[in-house]
Length: 215
Image 1 (cartoon, rainbow, N blue to C red):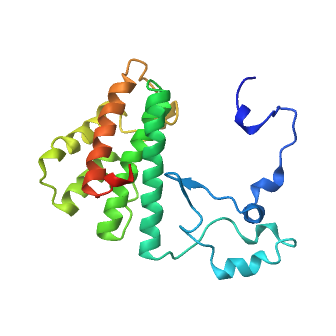
Image 2 (tube, rainbow, N blue to C red):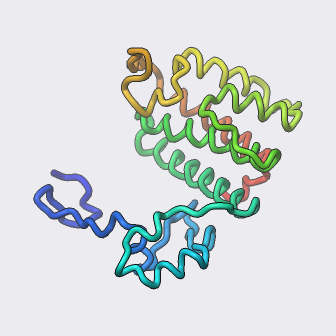
């Protein structure tokens, strides 16, 4: 098959590299994820407690599970900001490569969700545990007392999008079926038009967050 060639000449017959499923092994290779083309090396450093355990990793592969607890507010904000920027970066590339793909719309929608959550975290120091864009946009407008003209109809779009595109299923473009025997019925939906509107919301949020210079 002519896929995944950038990863080498791989085949279904090849043996899975099981050691790659342990965080502890990845630390040996000093590779880092990229967030908006920036290395994630210094975003969240592993705690000393975890490092002490890592010294004895040969005896216990499960001593570090890849997560950390009790981050500072600034570190948490940095993580959310970088995730948001990376989703925007990916959405921008997908709009050009796959303008009519459901995956493109899903990534764009995720970027909007992350933008609202980043800005709400910055304001309230809490994350609203919902994926619903109507709820998130409503809270964003309330917390920041939004009255800028360039945000006109953003809440209304999020509200109607959730109700009349997703049918209240925030996983709409992620999975083909949802709760209560509901299935994807967006085969007549203009993906490029949706991407256009999602991109507009992202641009408005970036401007509000004073992060336009990141792009």
